Structure formats: structure tokens, C-alpha cells
Length: 231
Image 1: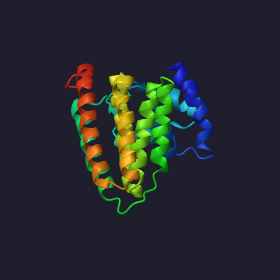
Image 2: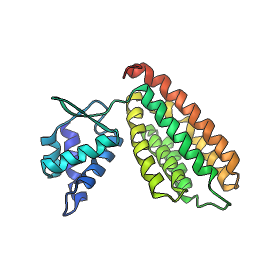
Image 3: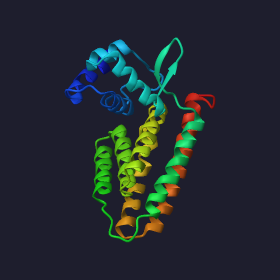
Image 4: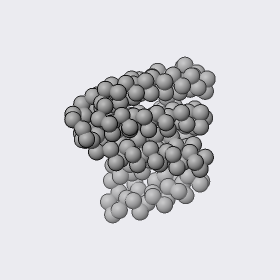
């Protein structure tokens, strides 16, 4: 925890002159997604508030925002913890992803599409794989799907999926088999990108739906062994 707090103190500059709860929650959300605070970790108000240089009230409001996003959970007389998802949570995350991401591809309209962000995420994943950085591959994979959602040009959809992807990272941290989890999807991201480059929305949607179904099966298989169905 000491190392995490040291890194967190480095984020103090990101707050600027006004230490709003929204900015604090942005920092904590990123740190949770990156695995600095793994699922089940108790978050100390004193330690985190001291590291960021924010008031207890500001930090509590940030905790409240992240609890609303399902990233934290408040346990009576125990404190605030990074949430440990249940298997049902993971299944619901993928159900939401399938509904939203496939609808984004279906609604793209006529090509050409602005695919630079997707292409950049594909290259990011390939580079991380060459370096043997499988957690980096997982991050690139999230970036790929975030860029795909961005094709909808909808702030509301992007905000919804930001929370969904952050929750997904909680599951990835518990599974803790990054190569097995992420390596197969590098080539599948390429296939989706190429279909969109060719203007084949229907093909891209079919590839994406199959991708998400297979990913759900793979994640749940390992996740169930790690935490059990009762969470």
C-alpha cells in the first residue's frame, strides 16, 4: 500500500487548483483500473486524502461517485472497499457490452469511417505483445473497444461504457491470467478493424458478437474458479 500511495501522491498535480470530487474520482478510477488498488482492497480516507492533499469531505464525495459506478462498496463499520464482482456481475457487463458495442457498429452509416483510433489501439496491442507485456495488451484491448464506442459520437454512450470498461478491469485483475485472457483477441481486433476498413458493417458486427461471446465464456470460466459463484 505504501508504494501505491507514493504513486498516488504523484497524481496530486492533476488536481490543479481546485480539488473537486470529480477530479479525485477520475484519479482513483484510473488507479483502480490499472490495478493499483486490487478488488477487495480497503481504501483509507486518511492515507489517500493525505496523498492527494484533499479534504475528507471531498474524498468521501469521490468515494460516493465511484460507489454509484459500482467500482467501490461501502461496508457498515468497516469502510470503503474496491468491489469484488460476482460471476453474475461479469455476465451482466458482457450483456451490456454486446448490446451497446454491436449497436454502435450496426448504426455506423455509410463508409468510410474514422478508424485511426482503432488502428492505433491495434498497434498498441501488437507492440505490448512483442514486449511480453500482457497487462499492456489488456489495456490496449480496452482502448480498442473504447475507440469503437467512440465511433457513435455520443457522449452519453461513451460515459456509460467508461464505467462498464472500468468494472471489466476489476474482473481482469481477479482472473490474473493476462496472456491467456488477452492474446487471442489481438488477431480478432485486427479482423474487426479490417472489416470496417472495407466498409463491411455486417461482417464487423458478426465478428464482434462472436468475440464478446467467446470472451465472456473464457473470463467466466476462470473467474468462477477464483471467486466462486457467490462472490
